[in-house]
Amino acid sequence: MKITFLALATAVIAAASGTTYAQQAQLKPGDGMPRVSTEMYSATDGSLIPYYKTADKNGMLVIFSCNTCPYVVKNEETIRKTIAYARQHHVGVAIINSNEAKRDGDDAFDAMKGYAAKQGYTVPYLMDKDSKLADAFGANHTPEVFLFSNQNTLVYKGAMNDNPATPAESKVSYINNAIDAMIAGKAADPAATKSIGCSIKRK
Image 1 (cartoon, rainbow, N blue to C red):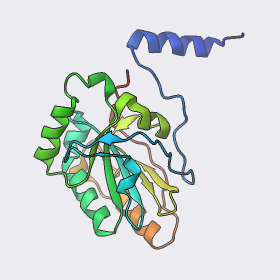
Image 2 (image 1 turned 60 degrees about the vertical axis):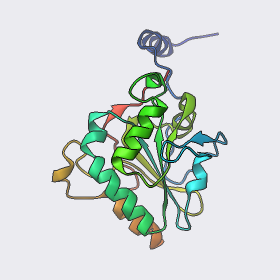
Image 3 (image 1 turned 180 degrees about the vertical axis):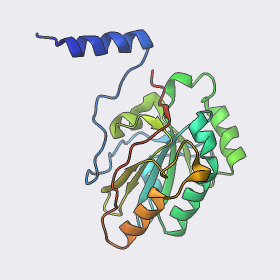
């Protein structure tokens, strides 16, 4: 079997870092919602649910997040406002913690419960065991969002706004604009942006 230098180098780097990279490419606008059937525990209320059961009549927003990433901390208020905006427009929301490599520390389930309470989450904050959902989405950062229509089609992915590093200076809410466009039956513009944040810590 022929092994390319690039593939070998990637494997060596992954082994050295203790990281297992997602095998699937990141979802593209127009792709369908992955039906990962595994039920996940919610740190918000202790329930056990499939993530897609949180969809509402106009669609669903998936937010990959965690407890301690500096970019998440900077965007806590943005996340709360995004959740409120989505729910006002009958878009369900699930927040996903895929940091499996930190499950014995900062992103343990008990730590997630404390974080959900501190942030006042009213939507499921789900523990993605073995980063299966992140792998299915090809998600790589926190925070990173994926917006699906009520036809389970991806209409927007990427950053919530145009300045994740300094959200107070943001001028454009990509995710709110995408929700508005989706509900109006129009294509999101842009439909994809670069997510900026911490890497998802896979085992």
